[in-house]
Image (cartoon, rainbow, N blue to C red; front, side, top):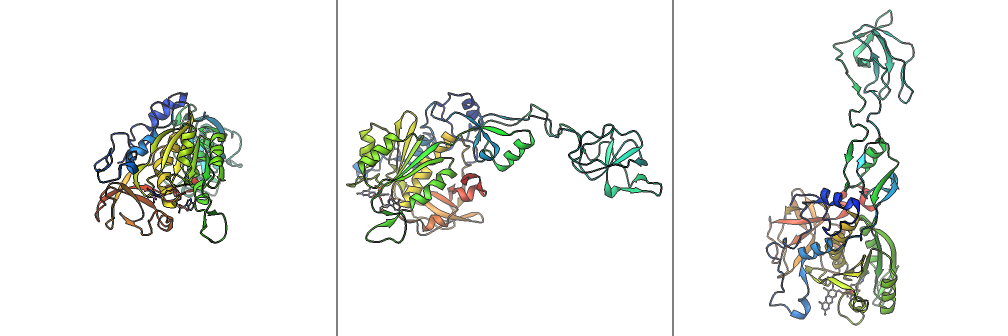
Length: 454
Ligand SMILES: Nc1nc2c(c(=O)[nH]1)N[C@H]1C(S)=C(S)[C@@H](COP(=O)(O)OP(=O)(O)OC[C@H]3O[C@@H](n4cnc5c(N)ncnc54)[C@H](O)[C@@H]3O)O[C@H]1N2
Ligand code: MOO
């Protein structure tokens, strides 16, 4: 569980960078392909379970694999050049190739004197500062005061640090100790030559990448744009302010999903609350130009659960119709148009988080060409009850080398996940204390920086 790289659809090879992105990201083995079910994940329903409720649900690893591979050729947005400050968190669609030598001139690495030949040296009156034009060449036996970062004059043999030099009464400079040839000079091209590839296609743009790009002469970077996501929040019972009253509750998903989706690489283009209105849902889905529509609620079979009927009405292709995971088993993934997918998150808030990480995360990762997070496992500090047949996703905090399960992990609760660092993937049947358990990092814990939330 240690390889890194994005799951890139083998079929999505339609623009130049696709092949390179696939090469960069290949071999990650995550999320699972069809073969990664692992022990305990069944491809068929358990005989003890009601068939009609479960017959279409697929094992959790399979659902993630399907979501990662759902993107067809051409569905990813074409690469665009963006200014450096807009590139953070995106993925390079062109290699970062040095536009200059780095350093671009022989540079003093220290404050002191540039010297030519063996000492003692006559010291020039005027020193050399960083950011100035080409200084006069030195002649043998000559020295000049120089600042860190300044251009080293031609024919300099070394830089003598201030603390290693002393001036005699005649003003001549002497070295304290040896001054090796080339000492404390950063030669032009030491880090790279103009045209060297610094970073490949598929690299996530981090703050360090921005710094390197600027140093190497870039004003813009060519990146894979964020997939556009429309969020549709369903439910007549939802309030957008104040206290719950009269059977109505606060909408927890409207505030939670947009920043989380951004953390997963999306550009959230719309957040709409459309109640339990089948017509409004149909209109919103058919008019959406987003790459991905995320709905919340209405996935089950209740009287006002309009997601499935709407998908049938528009003849959408159901790619995942229920997942053997708790919470969140009614989650779904559909292809609504050639280049558009819909992720149906269940309305219970922790079930929605489960759907976000199970279906939206791999789908958005592929669309954004992002590298997959490196899968990892830690032992659990306490036993976790399992579902008899389904995977459970349980909020945990990471303490030392252990994952500590949190309480308040019911499907309608966010109290556990709000305090969590990760979700533990608890296999069917549960996990013993000390059992190594796969962890899905939550964006705020994994990144440690604001990259993902920009
Ligand atoms: N007969 C059955 N009923 C249900 C089943 C089942 O298997 N058989 N599954 C249950 C499970 S599990 C889930 S999860 C929910 C999924 O239901 P929906 O996706 O249709 O969601 P809703 O019914 O609209 O809402 C469920 C629950 O969540 C609350 N909710 C909805 N949206 C929000 C929001 N934005 N913020 C906060 N809370 C929200 C809503 O009020 C409900 O309490 O179905 C079960 N039923
Ligand atoms: O999907 Mo549900 O959250 O298991 O209650």
